[in-house]
Image 1: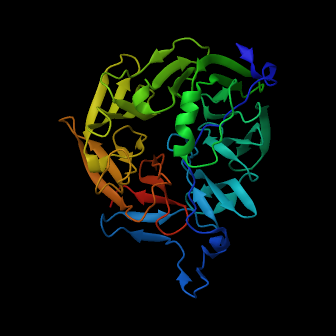
Image 2 (image 1 turned 30 degrees about the horizontal axis):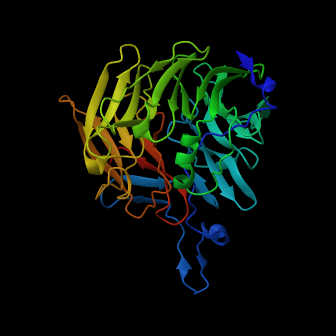
Image 3 (image 1 turned 30 degrees about the vertical axis):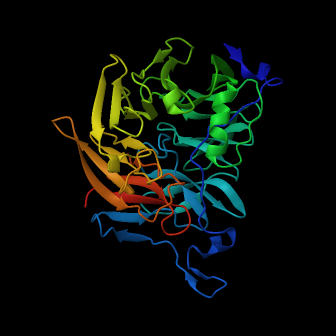
Length: 410
Protein backbone atom coordinates (compact mmCIF):
# COMPACT_ATOMS: atom_id res chain seq x y z
CA UNK A 1 0.00 0.00 0.00
CA UNK A 2 1.26 3.46 -0.81
CA UNK A 3 0.04 6.88 0.20
CA UNK A 4 -0.93 9.00 -2.78
CA UNK A 5 0.66 12.05 -1.20
CA UNK A 6 4.05 10.48 -1.96
CA UNK A 7 3.24 10.43 -5.67
CA UNK A 8 1.64 13.83 -6.23
CA UNK A 9 4.75 15.33 -7.76
CA UNK A 10 4.65 12.90 -10.69
CA UNK A 11 1.06 12.00 -11.40
CA UNK A 12 -1.91 13.49 -13.15
CA UNK A 13 -5.39 12.56 -12.08
CA UNK A 14 -8.76 12.21 -13.59
CA UNK A 15 -12.23 12.66 -12.18
CA UNK A 16 -14.76 10.00 -13.02
CA UNK A 17 -16.67 11.00 -16.13
CA UNK A 18 -20.35 11.46 -15.46
CA UNK A 19 -23.21 11.88 -17.88
CA UNK A 20 -22.69 15.03 -19.98
CA UNK A 21 -24.88 17.97 -19.04
CA UNK A 22 -27.13 19.48 -21.66
CA UNK A 23 -28.80 22.75 -20.75
CA UNK A 24 -31.54 23.29 -23.29
CA UNK A 25 -32.28 26.87 -22.29
CA UNK A 26 -29.68 29.59 -22.68
CA UNK A 27 -28.15 31.15 -19.59
CA UNK A 28 -30.21 34.31 -20.16
CA UNK A 29 -33.41 32.32 -19.73
CA UNK A 30 -32.49 30.60 -16.45
CA UNK A 31 -34.36 33.15 -14.39
CA UNK A 32 -37.53 32.46 -16.40
CA UNK A 33 -38.00 28.93 -15.17
CA UNK A 34 -40.40 29.76 -12.39
CA UNK A 35 -42.74 32.27 -14.05
CA UNK A 36 -41.89 32.08 -17.77
CA UNK A 37 -40.48 34.94 -19.83
CA UNK A 38 -40.56 36.63 -23.22
CA UNK A 39 -38.22 35.80 -26.05
CA UNK A 40 -36.88 38.56 -28.33
CA UNK A 41 -39.73 37.70 -30.72
CA UNK A 42 -42.23 38.32 -27.94
CA UNK A 43 -43.42 34.73 -27.60
CA UNK A 44 -43.74 33.26 -24.12
CA UNK A 45 -41.28 30.63 -22.89
CA UNK A 46 -43.35 28.29 -20.71
CA UNK A 47 -42.06 27.25 -17.33
CA UNK A 48 -41.52 23.53 -16.70
CA UNK A 49 -44.63 21.79 -15.45
CA UNK A 50 -44.90 21.08 -11.73
CA UNK A 51 -47.08 17.97 -11.80
CA UNK A 52 -49.21 15.95 -14.21
CA UNK A 53 -50.57 12.51 -15.03
CA UNK A 54 -48.88 11.16 -18.14
CA UNK A 55 -51.74 10.67 -20.62
CA UNK A 56 -49.90 7.79 -22.32
CA UNK A 57 -49.28 5.78 -19.14
CA UNK A 58 -51.61 7.00 -16.38
CA UNK A 59 -48.71 7.52 -13.96
CA UNK A 60 -48.25 10.66 -11.86
CA UNK A 61 -45.12 12.73 -12.56
CA UNK A 62 -43.81 15.46 -10.22
CA UNK A 63 -41.03 17.98 -10.80
CA UNK A 64 -38.82 17.95 -7.70
CA UNK A 65 -36.35 20.68 -8.67
CA UNK A 66 -38.57 23.73 -8.22
CA UNK A 67 -35.69 26.18 -8.06
CA UNK A 68 -34.21 28.48 -10.71
CA UNK A 69 -31.60 27.12 -13.11
CA UNK A 70 -30.90 23.62 -14.35
CA UNK A 71 -30.86 20.62 -12.03
CA UNK A 72 -29.72 17.01 -12.26
CA UNK A 73 -30.30 14.01 -10.03
CA UNK A 74 -27.23 11.98 -9.08
CA UNK A 75 -25.73 9.36 -11.39
CA UNK A 76 -27.73 6.14 -11.43
CA UNK A 77 -25.52 4.15 -9.00
CA UNK A 78 -24.86 7.06 -6.61
CA UNK A 79 -27.08 7.04 -3.51
CA UNK A 80 -28.93 10.36 -3.19
CA UNK A 81 -31.15 9.56 -0.19
CA UNK A 82 -30.86 9.48 3.55
CA UNK A 83 -31.55 6.07 5.04
CA UNK A 84 -35.06 7.11 6.14
CA UNK A 85 -35.78 8.55 2.70
CA UNK A 86 -36.75 11.94 4.13
CA UNK A 87 -33.92 13.87 2.41
CA UNK A 88 -32.63 13.74 -1.17
CA UNK A 89 -29.58 15.48 -2.65
CA UNK A 90 -29.33 16.73 -6.23
CA UNK A 91 -27.18 19.14 -8.20
CA UNK A 92 -28.34 22.63 -9.18
CA UNK A 93 -26.73 25.45 -11.11
CA UNK A 94 -27.58 29.11 -11.63
CA UNK A 95 -25.23 31.81 -12.99
CA UNK A 96 -24.31 32.97 -9.47
CA UNK A 97 -23.83 29.46 -8.02
CA UNK A 98 -22.77 26.85 -10.55
CA UNK A 99 -22.62 23.16 -9.69
CA UNK A 100 -23.80 23.30 -6.11
CA UNK A 101 -25.53 20.55 -4.16
CA UNK A 102 -28.97 21.18 -2.71
CA UNK A 103 -31.10 19.07 -0.38
CA UNK A 104 -34.81 18.33 -0.80
CA UNK A 105 -37.12 17.57 2.11
CA UNK A 106 -39.17 14.78 0.55
CA UNK A 107 -42.25 15.42 2.73
CA UNK A 108 -42.46 19.20 2.40
CA UNK A 109 -40.65 19.60 -0.97
CA UNK A 110 -38.60 22.40 0.61
CA UNK A 111 -35.19 22.81 -1.05
CA UNK A 112 -32.12 24.30 0.65
CA UNK A 113 -28.61 25.00 -0.67
CA UNK A 114 -26.23 22.49 0.88
CA UNK A 115 -22.74 23.21 -0.47
CA UNK A 116 -20.69 25.91 -2.08
CA UNK A 117 -20.49 26.09 -5.90
CA UNK A 118 -18.12 23.77 -7.71
CA UNK A 119 -19.25 20.64 -5.83
CA UNK A 120 -19.71 17.25 -7.48
CA UNK A 121 -19.15 13.51 -7.31
CA UNK A 122 -21.70 13.28 -4.51
CA UNK A 123 -22.90 10.23 -2.57
CA UNK A 124 -25.12 10.24 0.54
CA UNK A 125 -24.17 8.08 3.49
CA UNK A 126 -26.92 5.75 4.62
CA UNK A 127 -25.72 5.85 8.23
CA UNK A 128 -24.43 9.30 9.01
CA UNK A 129 -26.90 11.58 7.17
CA UNK A 130 -23.92 13.23 5.51
CA UNK A 131 -23.27 13.81 1.83
CA UNK A 132 -19.69 13.20 0.67
CA UNK A 133 -18.47 15.18 -2.33
CA UNK A 134 -15.51 16.81 -4.09
CA UNK A 135 -14.70 20.48 -4.37
CA UNK A 136 -11.46 22.19 -5.31
CA UNK A 137 -9.37 19.02 -5.19
CA UNK A 138 -10.57 17.97 -1.74
CA UNK A 139 -13.07 15.58 -0.19
CA UNK A 140 -15.78 17.14 2.00
CA UNK A 141 -18.74 15.92 4.05
CA UNK A 142 -21.80 18.02 4.88
CA UNK A 143 -24.61 17.03 7.25
CA UNK A 144 -28.03 16.99 5.59
CA UNK A 145 -29.79 18.59 8.57
CA UNK A 146 -27.29 20.92 10.26
CA UNK A 147 -25.25 21.66 7.11
CA UNK A 148 -22.09 21.31 9.21
CA UNK A 149 -19.21 20.85 6.77
CA UNK A 150 -15.82 19.22 7.22
CA UNK A 151 -12.92 18.71 4.84
CA UNK A 152 -11.82 15.07 5.12
CA UNK A 153 -8.91 14.66 2.69
CA UNK A 154 -6.90 16.37 -0.02
CA UNK A 155 -6.72 14.71 -3.43
CA UNK A 156 -3.85 14.90 -5.89
CA UNK A 157 -4.53 17.43 -8.67
CA UNK A 158 -7.69 16.43 -10.59
CA UNK A 159 -8.10 13.32 -8.44
CA UNK A 160 -11.35 12.16 -6.91
CA UNK A 161 -13.33 9.45 -5.15
CA UNK A 162 -17.08 9.04 -5.36
CA UNK A 163 -18.03 5.68 -3.84
CA UNK A 164 -18.62 5.05 -0.14
CA UNK A 165 -18.33 1.67 1.58
CA UNK A 166 -21.04 -0.01 3.63
CA UNK A 167 -19.86 1.12 7.08
CA UNK A 168 -18.80 4.63 5.95
CA UNK A 169 -15.14 4.18 6.79
CA UNK A 170 -13.66 4.33 3.28
CA UNK A 171 -14.17 6.01 -0.05
CA UNK A 172 -12.50 4.84 -3.25
CA UNK A 173 -11.54 6.37 -6.57
CA UNK A 174 -9.09 6.39 -9.48
CA UNK A 175 -6.28 8.59 -10.77
CA UNK A 176 -3.97 8.70 -13.76
CA UNK A 177 -0.35 7.99 -12.83
CA UNK A 178 1.29 9.20 -16.03
CA UNK A 179 0.96 9.62 -19.77
CA UNK A 180 -0.32 12.47 -21.95
CA UNK A 181 -3.08 14.85 -20.95
CA UNK A 182 -6.23 14.37 -23.04
CA UNK A 183 -8.69 17.18 -23.67
CA UNK A 184 -12.19 16.17 -22.55
CA UNK A 185 -13.89 19.52 -23.11
CA UNK A 186 -15.66 18.46 -26.32
CA UNK A 187 -18.31 15.82 -27.00
CA UNK A 188 -17.65 12.34 -25.67
CA UNK A 189 -17.14 10.99 -29.17
CA UNK A 190 -14.10 13.25 -29.62
CA UNK A 191 -12.10 11.89 -26.67
CA UNK A 192 -13.47 8.47 -25.62
CA UNK A 193 -11.33 6.37 -27.97
CA UNK A 194 -8.29 8.60 -27.34
CA UNK A 195 -8.32 7.85 -23.61
CA UNK A 196 -8.70 4.13 -24.23
CA UNK A 197 -5.92 3.98 -26.82
CA UNK A 198 -3.52 6.04 -24.66
CA UNK A 199 -3.18 3.12 -22.19
CA UNK A 200 -2.08 5.49 -19.46
CA UNK A 201 -1.11 3.94 -16.09
CA UNK A 202 -4.00 4.29 -13.65
CA UNK A 203 -4.56 3.37 -10.02
CA UNK A 204 -7.36 2.58 -7.63
CA UNK A 205 -7.04 4.15 -4.19
CA UNK A 206 -8.97 4.45 -0.94
CA UNK A 207 -9.44 7.34 1.45
CA UNK A 208 -9.72 6.57 5.18
CA UNK A 209 -12.52 8.90 6.32
CA UNK A 210 -11.30 8.99 9.91
CA UNK A 211 -7.70 9.98 9.13
CA UNK A 212 -7.75 11.30 5.58
CA UNK A 213 -5.01 8.83 4.62
CA UNK A 214 -4.98 7.72 0.97
CA UNK A 215 -3.72 4.32 -0.13
CA UNK A 216 -3.11 2.83 -3.57
CA UNK A 217 -4.13 -0.83 -3.91
CA UNK A 218 -4.36 -1.56 -7.66
CA UNK A 219 -2.43 -0.46 -10.77
CA UNK A 220 -3.43 -0.95 -14.40
CA UNK A 221 -2.13 0.13 -17.81
CA UNK A 222 -5.40 1.48 -19.16
CA UNK A 223 -8.59 3.25 -18.20
CA UNK A 224 -10.39 2.56 -14.89
CA UNK A 225 -13.87 3.71 -13.92
CA UNK A 226 -17.35 3.01 -12.51
CA UNK A 227 -15.96 2.32 -9.05
CA UNK A 228 -18.65 1.06 -6.64
CA UNK A 229 -18.37 -0.38 -3.15
CA UNK A 230 -20.61 -3.30 -2.22
CA UNK A 231 -23.72 -2.13 -0.31
CA UNK A 232 -23.14 -4.82 2.33
CA UNK A 233 -19.44 -5.82 2.39
CA UNK A 234 -17.27 -2.85 3.50
CA UNK A 235 -14.14 -4.28 1.90
CA UNK A 236 -15.48 -5.35 -1.51
CA UNK A 237 -15.25 -3.08 -4.53
CA UNK A 238 -16.52 -3.35 -8.09
CA UNK A 239 -14.87 -1.39 -10.90
CA UNK A 240 -14.53 -1.52 -14.66
CA UNK A 241 -11.86 -1.55 -17.32
CA UNK A 242 -13.27 1.41 -19.23
CA UNK A 243 -13.33 1.92 -22.98
CA UNK A 244 -15.27 0.55 -25.99
CA UNK A 245 -17.25 -2.27 -24.43
CA UNK A 246 -16.73 -4.68 -27.34
CA UNK A 247 -12.94 -4.44 -26.97
CA UNK A 248 -12.56 -5.44 -23.32
CA UNK A 249 -13.76 -7.57 -20.42
CA UNK A 250 -15.21 -4.77 -18.33
CA UNK A 251 -16.63 -5.84 -14.94
CA UNK A 252 -14.25 -6.70 -12.09
CA UNK A 253 -14.30 -7.18 -8.33
CA UNK A 254 -11.41 -6.54 -5.94
CA UNK A 255 -10.99 -6.15 -2.21
CA UNK A 256 -9.87 -2.82 -0.79
CA UNK A 257 -6.57 -4.33 0.32
CA UNK A 258 -5.77 -5.31 -3.28
CA UNK A 259 -6.59 -9.00 -2.95
CA UNK A 260 -9.28 -11.03 -4.70
CA UNK A 261 -9.10 -9.51 -8.19
CA UNK A 262 -11.79 -11.29 -10.21
CA UNK A 263 -13.42 -10.90 -13.62
CA UNK A 264 -17.20 -11.04 -13.14
CA UNK A 265 -18.34 -11.55 -16.74
CA UNK A 266 -16.19 -12.79 -19.60
CA UNK A 267 -17.21 -12.18 -23.20
CA UNK A 268 -17.72 -15.33 -25.25
CA UNK A 269 -18.24 -14.10 -28.83
CA UNK A 270 -16.93 -11.18 -30.94
CA UNK A 271 -18.74 -7.87 -30.37
CA UNK A 272 -20.36 -9.04 -27.12
CA UNK A 273 -20.69 -6.16 -24.69
CA UNK A 274 -21.49 -5.81 -20.98
CA UNK A 275 -21.58 -2.63 -18.95
CA UNK A 276 -23.32 0.04 -16.87
CA UNK A 277 -23.00 -2.40 -14.01
CA UNK A 278 -24.58 -1.87 -10.59
CA UNK A 279 -25.02 -3.74 -7.31
CA UNK A 280 -28.19 -5.41 -6.15
CA UNK A 281 -29.31 -4.06 -2.75
CA UNK A 282 -28.35 -7.25 -0.88
CA UNK A 283 -24.79 -7.22 -2.27
CA UNK A 284 -25.19 -10.73 -3.68
CA UNK A 285 -25.64 -9.85 -7.35
CA UNK A 286 -24.07 -7.47 -9.86
CA UNK A 287 -26.49 -6.45 -12.62
CA UNK A 288 -25.53 -5.12 -16.05
CA UNK A 289 -26.59 -4.40 -19.63
CA UNK A 290 -25.61 -7.43 -21.74
CA UNK A 291 -25.75 -7.57 -25.55
CA UNK A 292 -24.82 -10.79 -27.38
CA UNK A 293 -23.67 -9.49 -29.80
CA UNK A 294 -23.76 -5.69 -29.66
CA UNK A 295 -26.99 -4.15 -30.98
CA UNK A 296 -28.55 -7.56 -31.72
CA UNK A 297 -29.75 -9.46 -28.63
CA UNK A 298 -30.40 -7.61 -25.39
CA UNK A 299 -30.46 -8.82 -21.80
CA UNK A 300 -30.64 -7.39 -18.30
CA UNK A 301 -28.13 -9.78 -16.75
CA UNK A 302 -26.94 -10.49 -13.23
CA UNK A 303 -23.98 -12.44 -11.88
CA UNK A 304 -24.00 -14.05 -8.44
CA UNK A 305 -20.93 -12.73 -6.62
CA UNK A 306 -20.39 -15.95 -4.65
CA UNK A 307 -20.96 -18.56 -7.37
CA UNK A 308 -20.49 -16.73 -10.67
CA UNK A 309 -23.85 -18.06 -11.90
CA UNK A 310 -25.58 -15.70 -14.33
CA UNK A 311 -29.24 -14.74 -14.72
CA UNK A 312 -30.36 -13.29 -18.05
CA UNK A 313 -33.67 -11.53 -18.62
CA UNK A 314 -34.34 -10.93 -22.34
CA UNK A 315 -35.05 -7.28 -23.24
CA UNK A 316 -36.92 -6.22 -26.36
CA UNK A 317 -35.18 -3.70 -28.60
CA UNK A 318 -37.57 -0.85 -27.79
CA UNK A 319 -37.25 -1.59 -24.06
CA UNK A 320 -33.46 -1.34 -23.98
CA UNK A 321 -32.27 1.38 -21.60
CA UNK A 322 -29.08 3.41 -21.23
CA UNK A 323 -29.17 2.58 -17.52
CA UNK A 324 -31.13 0.08 -15.48
CA UNK A 325 -31.65 0.08 -11.74
CA UNK A 326 -33.23 -2.11 -9.07
CA UNK A 327 -35.75 -1.45 -6.32
CA UNK A 328 -34.61 -1.53 -2.67
CA UNK A 329 -36.46 -4.81 -2.12
CA UNK A 330 -34.81 -6.34 -5.20
CA UNK A 331 -38.15 -7.28 -6.78
CA UNK A 332 -38.39 -4.85 -9.70
CA UNK A 333 -36.16 -2.98 -12.13
CA UNK A 334 -36.39 0.37 -13.85
CA UNK A 335 -34.95 1.55 -17.15
CA UNK A 336 -34.48 5.02 -18.63
CA UNK A 337 -35.04 4.12 -22.30
CA UNK A 338 -33.01 5.22 -25.27
CA UNK A 339 -33.04 7.30 -28.44
CA UNK A 340 -33.04 5.91 -32.02
CA UNK A 341 -29.38 6.89 -32.55
CA UNK A 342 -28.19 4.81 -29.57
CA UNK A 343 -26.86 1.26 -29.57
CA UNK A 344 -30.27 -0.48 -29.71
CA UNK A 345 -31.56 1.73 -32.55
CA UNK A 346 -35.01 1.55 -31.00
CA UNK A 347 -37.94 2.94 -32.98
CA UNK A 348 -40.08 3.61 -29.88
CA UNK A 349 -37.68 3.47 -26.96
CA UNK A 350 -37.97 6.90 -25.33
CA UNK A 351 -39.78 5.90 -22.13
CA UNK A 352 -39.11 5.46 -18.44
CA UNK A 353 -39.75 1.75 -17.90
CA UNK A 354 -40.73 -0.51 -14.99
CA UNK A 355 -39.72 -4.18 -15.30
CA UNK A 356 -41.15 -6.98 -13.17
CA UNK A 357 -39.52 -10.47 -13.28
CA UNK A 358 -41.93 -13.29 -14.14
CA UNK A 359 -41.81 -16.99 -13.16
CA UNK A 360 -40.92 -17.98 -16.74
CA UNK A 361 -37.70 -15.94 -16.68
CA UNK A 362 -39.02 -12.97 -18.63
CA UNK A 363 -39.68 -9.37 -17.63
CA UNK A 364 -43.09 -7.73 -17.74
CA UNK A 365 -42.51 -4.20 -19.03
CA UNK A 366 -44.66 -1.19 -18.17
CA UNK A 367 -44.28 2.33 -19.55
CA UNK A 368 -44.17 5.02 -16.84
CA UNK A 369 -43.21 8.30 -18.55
CA UNK A 370 -43.32 9.39 -22.18
CA UNK A 371 -39.84 10.75 -22.95
CA UNK A 372 -40.45 11.46 -26.66
CA UNK A 373 -39.55 15.14 -26.26
CA UNK A 374 -36.45 14.44 -24.16
CA UNK A 375 -32.96 14.90 -25.65
CA UNK A 376 -30.99 11.80 -24.64
CA UNK A 377 -27.68 13.66 -24.70
CA UNK A 378 -28.81 14.13 -21.09
CA UNK A 379 -29.23 10.54 -19.93
CA UNK A 380 -32.19 10.20 -17.50
CA UNK A 381 -30.43 7.96 -14.91
CA UNK A 382 -33.29 6.27 -13.02
CA UNK A 383 -33.16 5.77 -9.22
CA UNK A 384 -35.77 4.23 -6.93
CA UNK A 385 -36.67 6.03 -3.70
CA UNK A 386 -35.88 4.06 -0.51
CA UNK A 387 -39.53 3.03 -0.11
CA UNK A 388 -39.68 1.87 -3.74
CA UNK A 389 -42.77 3.97 -4.46
CA UNK A 390 -41.18 6.51 -6.81
CA UNK A 391 -38.51 6.56 -9.51
CA UNK A 392 -36.37 9.70 -9.76
CA UNK A 393 -34.92 10.74 -13.12
CA UNK A 394 -33.59 13.70 -15.14
CA UNK A 395 -35.54 15.29 -17.97
CA UNK A 396 -35.24 18.20 -20.39
CA UNK A 397 -38.55 17.70 -22.21
CA UNK A 398 -39.88 21.01 -20.84
CA UNK A 399 -36.76 23.01 -21.75
CA UNK A 400 -33.92 23.00 -19.23
CA UNK A 401 -32.64 19.97 -17.33
CA UNK A 402 -34.77 19.26 -14.26
CA UNK A 403 -35.27 16.51 -11.67
CA UNK A 404 -38.53 14.56 -11.78
CA UNK A 405 -40.14 11.61 -10.02
CA UNK A 406 -42.77 9.24 -11.34
CA UNK A 407 -45.02 7.29 -9.02
CA UNK A 408 -44.71 3.54 -9.58
CA UNK A 409 -48.37 2.83 -8.74
CA UNK A 410 -51.09 4.43 -10.84
